[in-house]
Structures are given as C-alpha cells and as structure tokens.
Image (cartoon, rainbow, N blue to C red; front, side, top):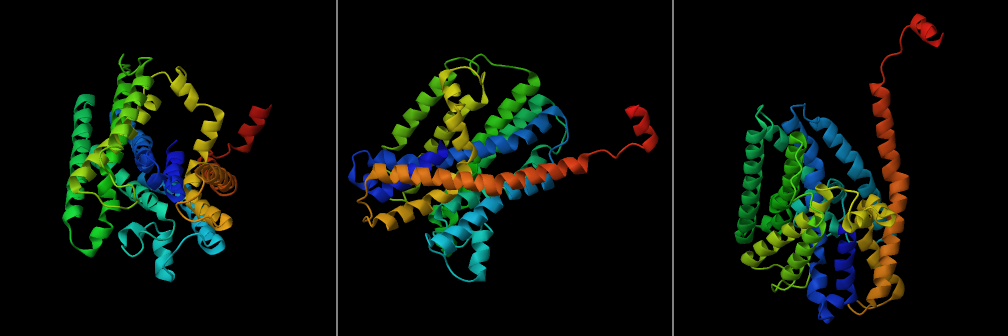
Length: 381
C-alpha cells in the first residue's frame, strides 16, 4: 500500500493531475506513503530488541542485524541504480568516483549537491540506512539494565518521547539554519526520528503485552481495524486541506511543516495498528491485507519503490508526451505494471537468492558436528 501511494504521488504530479485538478491537493499528499514505510520499519526492526528487553533474553546481535540489513538492502539498490543510470539513462547523476561512492554508500542526503540527483526517491532509503545503523545502539541504551516489566516499559516510553522531542527540535533548528548543510538537513535521520519512534512504540507495547500475556479488549475489538482506518482517512483528508504546497520539495513555514509531520506520523500509526493488534485472521480489513495479490506486491514492494521513477521517465520518453499533460490512467497503469515486473525480477534474480544463500550458510554453520562412527553405526542399526 505504501509503495503504491508513492507511485501515485509521482505519477499524478508528472501527469499534471496534481496541478490541474481540484483533487490535486489530495494527490500531492500521497507522499504520506513514505511515513508508513518508516512506521513499519520502526515496528518490525525494533520488536526483537523490545521482546528481549521484556523477556529477559539476550538481545539480537548488532553485527548480525547490520549484516542482514546490508544484504537485504544493498544488492537490489546497487543493481537498480547502475541499470537506471548507465543502461536506461533515466536519472541525472554527478559524475566521478567520489559521487558514485556517495550514491552507492547511501550518503546522498548528506551532500547538498547530490541530494536531488541519482535515484531521487532513494533519499528515504538513505534515511532508512541511517536508522539501521543507530537502532542496535539505541537498543543497548534501553536494555543496559535488568528491570521489572513496568520499569522497562516506563523507560522505553520515556526514551521514545525524548526521540520525538529531539526530532521536532531538529526540524526547528534546520528551518532556521543558514549554512549550506541546511539544504539537506530536512532529509537527515533526526528529522524523521518521530516517525520511526511511532513504529517502535507499537513494538514496545505489543512486546510488553506479549510477555504479560494480556489482550486488552479495546485492541482486540472487532471494530478496531475499521475505526483505526477511518481515523487514518480523516487524518489524510485533514493534512490535504491545511494549505501545503503541491510541488515536491517545496518548503513550508516551520509551523505548517511540524503539523504536516505530526499528521503524517499519525496516519502511518493508524494504518499499521490493525496489523499489530487483534486476531489477524478475522475481519474484512485484515483478510484483505492477506489477499494473495496484495501479499505478492508486498513481497516485492522494495523493488517497486526502487524502479518506479525510472519507468515514469521512460514512459514520458517513449510516448513523447509533454510534462504535466499526460493521460494519468495510461501513465499510472504502465508505470505500476513495469514497476511490479522489474521488482519481481529483482526479487527473483537478486534479493531472494542472496537471502536464501545467507540462510543456508547460517544453517550449515550451526549444524552440530557429526557423531563418531561407532555411534552412527549403532544408530543406523
């Protein structure tokens, strides 16, 4: 869903729908899908650490976490970047070995001259990679002492509240900073720490409930998915009507920017809640999320995110349509189909083989030594 929202915001803008339609203010806010990505990442990646903090078991290895993240993210991104840049020529890059290292090293958001070049949508991927680097260190801080469940819960909640406050303070600082770095600061990790914190909050609460073996009636109520998604729809409509600019990368006054950030985070939080709490096999909302087509798109959604902007550029090139005067339905269907196809190829040929090879090596390494020959004979007999 988040990946398709991101396709929507870019396709509607290039087609001219955003600027020419009365519904353009809603189309422009489809960028909210990125916030959903960040909330999901915060939940999924922090939950094993949160469970360890509450369950009294050892934390996941930071080294293993980092290696797995690198293997999951890097190969598909490198393939997409190199193919889009040097085969399709569907993006603009700064040339030179130093620039190539910046792009391939997920550092373009930290260099103002590079932030809007390369795979421009990869700015959010750079934020994700920064989050991956910091998360195990945060887990060490939160789990440095053995605490009771109640004290640990208060510690986790206080830490997350501090992260949200820090994120908003950083955004205010970036808005008033006059240096060259200020051009990229709104895309640095601290500016989005609040969104990741909302996902981490879901991880903390769900872990605490799991170890307590508690199921609050409100969170397991059959109406929860409908209420949660209805509230998300209200939030989306609200943020679409507060006067935000329609153009991508256009800046807003700091007050309006903070309101947008808050509503984006709340939307992502409310969208994800039904997937975290309650019986996952019941209810129309949850069953719809488990439909095979939706699940399959979810499997390859990383690739969809990586490839979709290149296919938008290629569609415009092939059809010779003028920007902002393109049939939206044709553009949307073509780009979605091409993005899912290329993402599927990426998953089958790049992502899945690396994941399986890594898993198989881990199983081989963990396999116990063979027993002595006499033992084997006795067992076989």
